[in-house]
Amino acid sequence: MSDTMTKPVTVIDVQTSPVSISAEAARRLQGLMQEKNLSEQFALRVFVAGGGCSGLQYGMTFDDQVREGDAEFVESGLRVLVDSMSANYMAGASIDYIDSLMGGGFKIDNPNAVSSCGCGSSFKPKNESGEAAQGGGGGCGSGGCGCQ
Image (tube, rainbow, N blue to C red; front, side):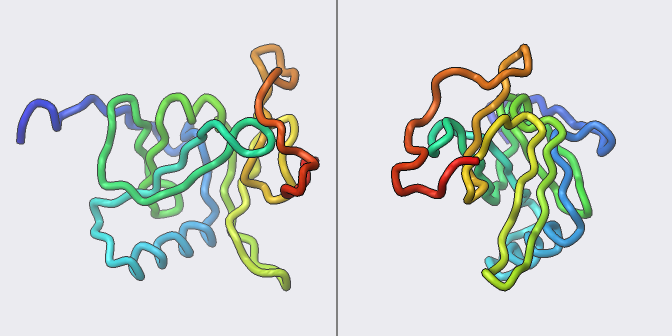
């Protein structure tokens, strides 16, 4: 293994993990990993990226690469990775799986969001003083999912 493959990893205790994942969400995600025949080296990567109608949007993917600055922890039996920038926006967030008559899906409850779109994949974060951050997206009300 080369030195470029060895990067410092932040290992976070479950009690202080940036996000919590419900047992049902973890079960569904582990099932998806099995369907895709992903090895145990893969983890769920949870991240925040620019975009969406509220300015930032959530993302989840399966990843087998731990990057410098990643928080790595196990939640409900599922290995999870969160980069440091995303961890700042998602501290205290929870991920659940909701099954309803309209269909099922993953729901993120984020205490750092001052508003979010109806679809739940986009949000506007608080700034350091706890108020809505300025700027961001602009698609609200333009045929998207409708901000709350």
